[in-house]
Length: 400
Ligand SMILES: Nc1nc2c(ncn2[C@@H]2O[C@H](COP(=O)(O)OP(=O)(O)OP(=O)(O)O)[C@@H](O)[C@H]2O)c(=O)[nH]1
Ligand SMILES: [Mg+2]
Image: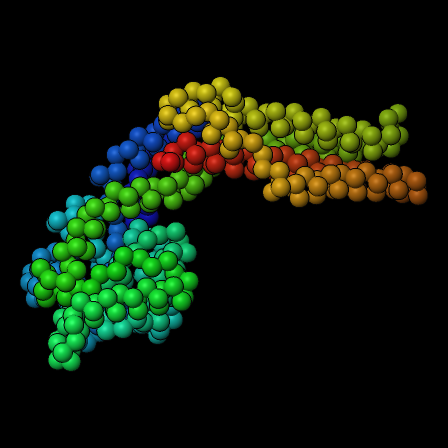
């Protein structure tokens, strides 16, 4: 089965090194390490899925790409019967580090698309070539939507074009006009289903010097670096999630501790000289502020880092700084919820005291509410800062 992008880009050991660098507060070093990987993608293997309906000519196409004919040693099995039910990879000599995956027909597995996608591990492929014969298929449209939905790209191959050429000739039609019509139809069919039309190739796997087969090979060779670079940009969030996970777990434990401390203060009996709601609110504010400063320090999001990083990734520091500024419209609902939660808790406690609830009830309420509010505020703060790290890394490594 095709490997996930992440495991192709970093070995387990490299991944661990990144995690420990990040744990030690070396975010800049982590970013520079990922950058150095992204500048050297030649050796990264690319998994290209070749898919389409049963009998559309997928296996014959893969053999043609590899310079083989059906029946040659190592060639993919072909035929008029449904021939292949397991995804199988084939190396492509002309395109180093490219694996072409021969997938079962998209109308196999009982015609259920989601079932099919799960079975072939659709998400593990980096790029797709949809092979379709004779006319535009409903399955092609659905698959194309799924590909673009994942932010990935594909080519559309109209196969067995020698058959179309034969029919057009028999009808005395102009071949070039025939090809233009087929291309126009494909484009409009994609547009109708809301898919951005891909590169379209009309090929015959039996006439490798004719039609669009030579152009397909040269276009793929030309596009490989940009496909790889897209694969990397798409993987950055996942890579960073992995890198930050151990530290996030450690910081979540600190958040729990601070929230438990706030809960303990909230449980202090009513008989102390300071009114309980005041004590709880002061504690929550104090612990939250201290916790936020601690998180800020731990996650290393300082101006000093920005200045140094900007010069190393050749980006203006203002561009990186823009990622650090909280996006108010999106953050407002969370802030409003937290304030409302705080006001509700304080009002409930004041009402509780006024109507003389038992000290035990008040203690329990004070403990639970102080814990919950402190926990929520600090957890939101941690989440927010980790999202900022993600945006910063993405911006630092983007190629524009
Ligand atoms: N005329 C013509 N026939 C082709 C071409 N490509 C494939 N065929 C024929 O179409 C039939 C099916 O081809 P395959 O390559 O086995 O098709 P497939 O999509 O791999 O089929 P499954 O694996 O069963 O889904 C075979 O008889 C091939 O010889 C082509 O470019 N032109
Ligand atoms: Mg096949």
